[in-house]
Amino acid sequence: MDFPKFPPEFSSQAKAAVIKAEVEASRVVQESLKLLDSPLSRLGHLVGPTNKRGVAFRYVMTVFYSFAKEACNLGMTRKWSVDTVDRASREFLRQTVVHAVFRYAHDIVFPEMTSMGQILPSIQAIFEKSPEWRKYQDDLLAVADSQATMPPEEASVGRKSTSETETTRPYPNRAAWLRERLKERAWNKNDIRRFGGPDRRTIQRVLDGLRVREDGLEQLAVALSKKGGKVAVVEIPSD
Image (cartoon, rainbow, N blue to C red; front, side):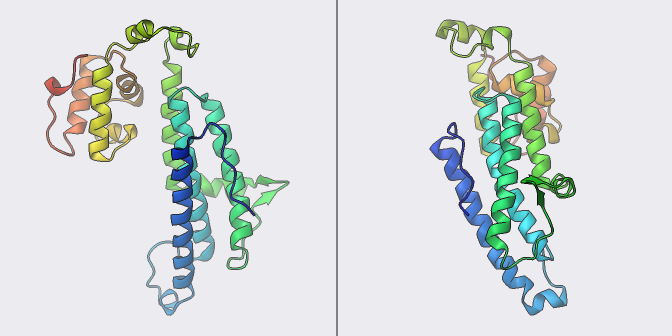
């Protein structure tokens, strides 16, 4: 069975990121299956999933999150609405489950995972307890926050002139600066909150080049200072 098809909106880079994740996850599956069949498994000396079903579930969620992350990027750039992001991600999860069962059926005895082509609620509940699902929910919430705070004048994409767009986004240098700081730390915008920074909505407004309160910038500086050196509020661009 072929790998699930990508939506036409996915760029070459997005497709490559998902394929890369799938290839790497497949290698982990093969290595894990070898270990599970080795004497180390019987001695209890394994780190990670300790049964073959756990290995398969980890494969599914790794590949799923790589897709979901790219789908959320489409949401952040307003190319997809938040409900489209969620619907496409859940559909990709379903297709990945079907793909995994077909691909690894000769190595793994799977429980019943689907019915009438849909993931069973009991299986979905297992997926939703995974770290990958929690990260997806964080990213999806960020998309929802971003789209919920989108100014009315930005609602019609492509209808505003360059000068009007610049007016609604008066802090482009601050947005670019924050993106660089996140890249330096290998963070996404959700990590800022985990290190004591402002809420997701405030962070998204900074990334969108919109105005935020001074105390939000102070919290941002504190969070960024937790990794990569101290950041003073005065270093944050004012434009």
